[in-house]
Image 1 (cartoon, helix red, strand yellow):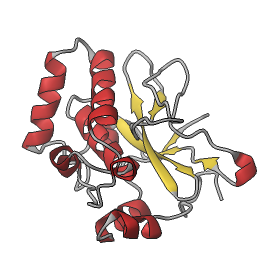
Image 2 (cartoon, one colour; image 1 turned 135 degrees about the vertical axis):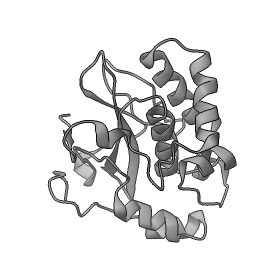
Image 3 (cartoon, rainbow, N blue to C red; image 1 turned 180 degrees about the vertical axis):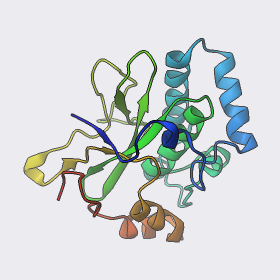
Image 4 (cartoon, one colour; image 1 turned 180 degrees about the horizontal axis):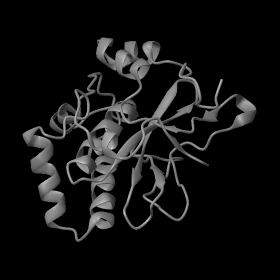
Length: 200
C-alpha cells in the first residue's frame, strides 16, 4: 500500500519524545549491544526488529497485566502490547539514526506497527513487532509485507496509510490511562479519528 508522511522530511522520524525515549541509557545500551553484532543499517534494523518481536512477549500472549508504553519501560519490564512494542522498536532504530514512524490498522481495536526508512530502499517499509504465535507469522521483509494481521475489508478492517512521526494521541492516551491490560482493551480506540488516513 502507498504510505504518506504526516511530517515533511525525515527529521521528525528521528526525534525523541516521552514515548520514544531513545536517549534513555537502557535504550542506548540495548542499541549498542545489538549494533555490535551487526554490520550496516539493514542488518541492525533486522536485529532490532527480531529482538523486540521475539524477546519481549506480547501482554495478551503472556498474561502479564501490566501496561507499559514508554520504550525504556518496555525494554526494562520485557512486556507490552503491539503499540508499546512498536515504541520500543522505534526507539532502538532511532537510536541508530534510522527514521521510523508509526502505522495503524483497524481491527476490533486499533493495532499498532511501525514503518522504517532505510537508505538503500528510499521508501517506507512497514514491519510488525507484535510477536509470533500459532496463526501469526510476522517477519522482517523489505521485498513484501509480512505483518501479523492482514486486514479483511469484508469485516470492516482497514489499513491506515499515514506514517505518523509520533504515536497517535488516542492510542497514547489509552496506554497512559489504563491501570491494567483488561482496562486498556476497553480504552483503546476502535478506529482513528485523524483525517487523511483513508479509513472510517
